Length: 198
Image (cartoon, rainbow, N blue to C red; front, side, top):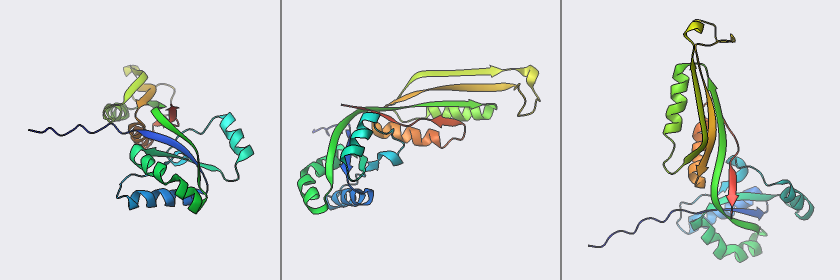
């Protein structure tokens, strides 16, 4: 009996493509559609990915006519683009300036709440993150002070308080989904996604 091969772990790459955002989007969407792929390009600034460092910004300001679009592509769409790079440049003027594999992604988060139900919501949300993610530097502190029961919401003392934070680390797509979920909660602050490129 033949066994089905295990699905390969997806890879992700950050590319800087010089040219207008709409043209980059249109070309990549057309490339994927033409190949029958469901892959989608993720634009770094729209997904909450931290910007390049100061040296890269200065280099871009000095040498580029158009702002480069930073896009995240999975291995499949990147492979399609590699095969079409010369044609893309000849037909559209778009140029791939850089192409780096994303080894891992991460972002920090913080929260603070003064009601048990919000503490439970936040802890449940963190417990339901996609499998394959790791929470580094996790800290949670809960305080119960029955003497403060009945104090108004904006008073300096509360009968319940929870605060904490950490850093979520893992594969880009899982980290991006975790950030989307946590950012949707009004009591959680999520930092931009940092990419470890290699």
